[in-house]
Structures are given as structure tokens and as C-alpha cells.
Length: 105
Image (tube, rainbow, N blue to C red; front, side, top):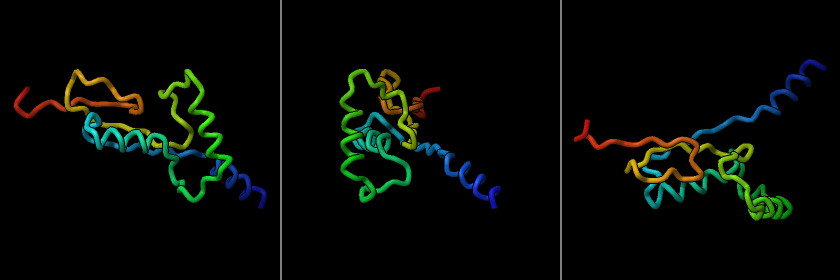
């Protein structure tokens, strides 16, 4: 019985990283979807958020110098493509790739 509890405790601590691929992160809609998902916790719903958690999240976002490169625990990792090579990498994206036009190459 103690072994089962120990295994259950270990599995609860495992945090699964969910990567989401979004095409053309430099477009208006994809950029906003990426921003939203990069701040969303995997498996959470709006009904589960309490006032205390909301205030805690607001306090975190108000801290100057908080790097967006540091991923929040349990949030989605955003990976995607950019349409132009000179487009700067969005701050919420973990990895970006450039899509070369079919005529080139």
C-alpha cells in the first residue's frame, strides 16, 4: 500500500510540457493566439481560477524585469513559423522557424 502512495506522489509531481505549433506567428491572429496560450496553464479552466490566484498572477506581471523568456510552470510552449526572415522573434515563442517561399532555393 505504501508503494502505491509513493508512486502516486511521484506521478503528481510530473509536469507535462505541452508544445503548440502555430503557423505564421507574425500575423495578427496567430500572434494573439500565441500570446494567449503562452500565458494559459495546461488543463486549467477559467472556472478554476480564484480571486487569490488572479491577484497573485497580477502581482507577478507587475514585477519589472520579469523575463518572458522564463516559462511559467505548466504553461504552453509556443513554437512556430515566421513569414519574413527580418521579422523579430516574438517574446512569447520558444522556437521560431522561417518559411522560405517555394520559388526560392
